[in-house]
Image (cartoon, rainbow, N blue to C red; front, side, top):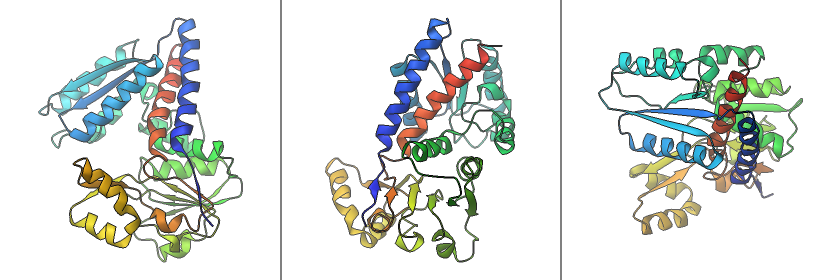
Length: 310
């Protein structure tokens, strides 16, 4: 068996096209969806992520505002910035790019965002709405996974889903979303006994732990669907170990090295072995990753729709 490769880029583009149509409908009503991205400091990866989000806004006709604050910004200063954005009628979505510098207390910052503008879906009010099955903004990556499963026609009702990972950002909300679709959900983590055996019980196996190539064929029931949420950039000694364990990655690494990049991007699942057992799987890169920004745009439009009715 060779797994079907689930094309996240294609699905992400479908969602963006749908969002673009909704943006046009809102503009016909005089509403221009607006997203504010707050970047504190000069973290290289964060800078790239925010730039990609701003570009997505521009491509869809969404008003975007980049708020770039210096590295030495205090918690109080960041809270004042968020308060200002909360009051702006032209801003319907607010995201604060994580991680924040060490001197900033993350929790009060996330709590300060108006839940109606919390397009990352991290505010406790939105998390509570999700837990209770009520309307609200959902975290983007878990929502992206659900879009993959829905658009690929993967049945969820009665299916056994195993989520390896229990983070507030991905694992927990994804498990709740699967539960709402009547899947039977098991959460696994670092202290789960006989993890491989539990994983092999899954019809749908989600890897969301942030450990490169941890999930191998031994974790996968033949014919299961594997969704790899991990995005791990591996370099140095860890890269040599990874290439030794999975030689199929070497051509990709050599292409990167020819461009002066001495690292490789891999997921939490070892594609070369998992793809021989699963019926379908998301690759890394090109699987769940492209959906996160697409769902951020969808959340921004949803927030604009709701706020414009008030």
